[in-house]
Length: 334
Ligand SMILES: [Zn+2]
Image 1 (cartoon, rainbow, N blue to C red):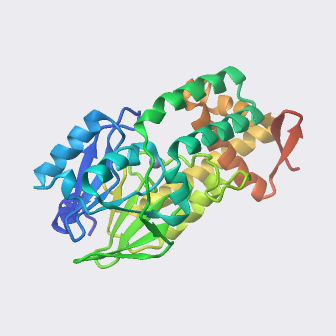
Image 2: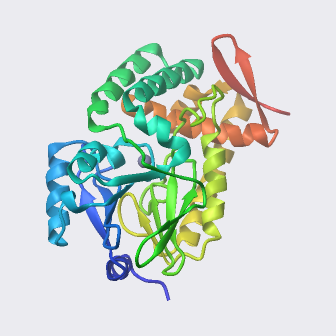
Image 3: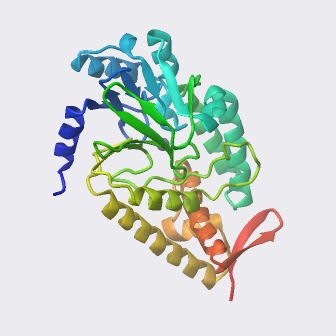
């Protein structure tokens, strides 16, 4: 029998996992952090670096009889600022250890330099895919203004893929599920069939497979959607009953949700193929054909969507990239 999302939250709470909904200034709304009442006393993600988020984190921990000072372990699920912005403050106040994916540790430690490098990567990618320069300039200042909500994170417990984190009353297995970001890590309680999935799966919105620099520092552009689809297929095979998300409600039927998302990507891929078959287009032109004149703040998101699906078509041999000087175009393989 499938649980309702409310029952799922109750069941998680009975297992000592409490959802704290922390406000963010971003379009996504609140971020879900999780208090795990166990030894060590653990917080999964922190919310963004803002006074409002800090106040809410403190008061919601207080509702469960705890405070930031008491936290012994902080788990960071991935590199996005809405999830880790208060990490430095939480660690300063509590002295908590920090567990996160080991291969992401360097990136998490060098937040500012990393954000700069990420912006340079994004701008180059946007220009090469036909986005007008003024849009990239505007996006760069948006990105810089967001940076204050982030934080660098000193990882004291670097986790390997598949590594088990032992607690007094449970074990959580850290599993790398890249795609939404290169560092996405989910935490699996096999005994209770609870998966803490953060932004790997979100019930009400499709997790954007954002184009991001690879964690290993190589210059090659990663195929974020291809990677994300592989990750979703692996999660689909897990016998999870409750999937706790980074935003919104818990997921109580992850197989149906993943099947739905895979079908959606398949439809979008065909739509993009039809546009390219009609005439060669660059990624920006494809985005405009689908979404019209997208808001500046959405330009990189929609570009990530288009390139992700174009990658699937290129890998499948149905489309090829043509280097048209400064801008890359896609054309159909006949
Ligand atoms: Zn995220």
